[in-house]
Image 1 (cartoon, rainbow, N blue to C red):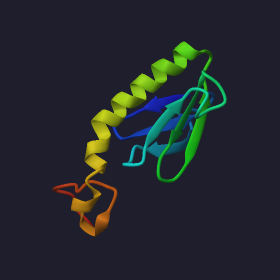
Image 2 (image 1 turned 45 degrees about the vertical axis):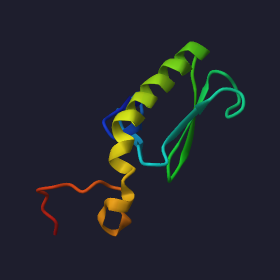
Image 3 (image 1 turned 45 degrees about the horizontal axis):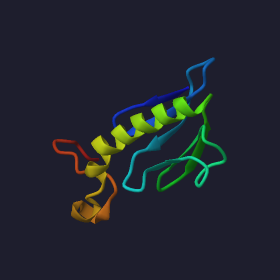
Image 4 (image 1 turned 30 degrees about the vertical axis):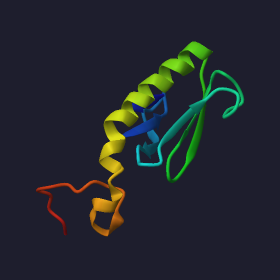
Length: 102
């Protein structure tokens, strides 16, 4: 299973709901599909600064639906992470106000 959250996607095991890995939607987050980028029209290639993930969907329509949802996620999230030059220490993460740091 895959779950799309506000700033990341996660892969979970279906039998135990164990989180296998999270994938942060950072300023290098990209989604590609189709023959020039993947091995078939029903495959999506997702990448960020740390990893690349290929997902094979049941059919092309399902791949298009996933891509559309992930593009909405990018539109809502990437502006937060794209301002790395304005964050302290050129961090990829946005500045969080009213947070305790130890």
